[in-house]
Image (tube, rainbow, N blue to C red; front, top):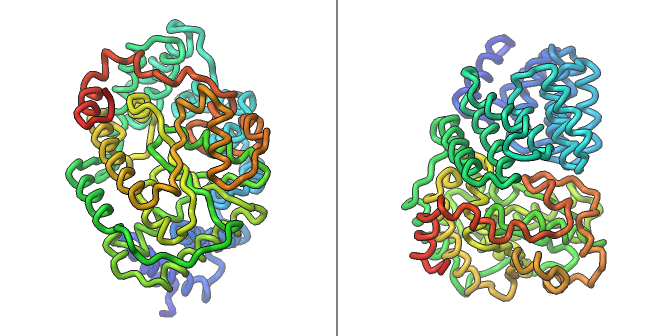
Length: 489
């Protein structure tokens, strides 16, 4: 094909049809013959990023810049997101964001990402100043207002910030997505000053708005379908299955999982305070593997070869080595990896798994109070959260019958009551010698890229234990559902 426009139309059509690998190949053919097409380099970079080829995407974005792409600040922004979220190179992310702002000092997406990076490192005052700057430039940038509220302390229910959040929610031009962001921020602000009824109402409205804003086919939870998926996992992973070759201890990752909002970020922060441990954060490797190369999972586990398991384990370790080249022990803190404990133990039979737990009512309520991704559709409704929690407990009971000696329950409530003995048991389980620095985990200078970014920078506190009692009038059905399952009394 000698017509560049025809090749371009073909690439665009393939992408629109969801045939991303073919679209990428079409762009490669196009640019091999006509390299002076900055927009095509940009489109190729997007596809490479989608496929997880981050170094290739960075190179293609650079080609787009070199060849005079329009709105280069957006390209620098995209490069910054790859460095920060995918490659964990925050210094490089900072450089890209600053390059975008050097080109366009009023470029709000770069300012938002820079403020988020400041939050990741616990730099509250700098994040606060950036959000104020954004709101000066764009007073109706409500995602900035919601995040601004997250780094503020309110004096009480009559605080002007609470009135500002309410006014933004009531604004006729506010989208459902922005109302959700603002509503979760309002709920958090009201909760912080003890206005429990108002906080619950704000969170309930925020969850409704979040569902309304979701793309078609997302934010859906089918209880029966989820039960069937748990049934299949239990039926697939049985005693006596073949496992991958055992690896030297120094190469083993540390897996941290459990329900969202159960203390997994805190567990990682404690371990990351140890001189031998590097925090990996929420790594996408296993979920991506399940959704692509091992689909339909777990059915494929019945036929996967030992050689294939060995290859996948080696790829995982190679990924850790590339992202964290100086890591001795690296944590993989992906809460919903509890679904894949059978896969983890098939790949790494010596793997140690830290399972974070807390009071079930506190856990379920905390999920409802957090703006989770729409792929976790259960999080938008307390009845669905209760059902999901019951199924999680059923699956964990099965995993413990298979791998109980290699699963350590780190109880958040026991940890905050008596930190030293809990942390001593945790480090011993992970095969680490004791270090006093683990008791001062809040001083660890690292990026934290979860909703617990501010909590884990404080010393341990007990105010979140038993928090559900503040909302007892609103969660009677949640209590009933968990009581029927024998989870609470």
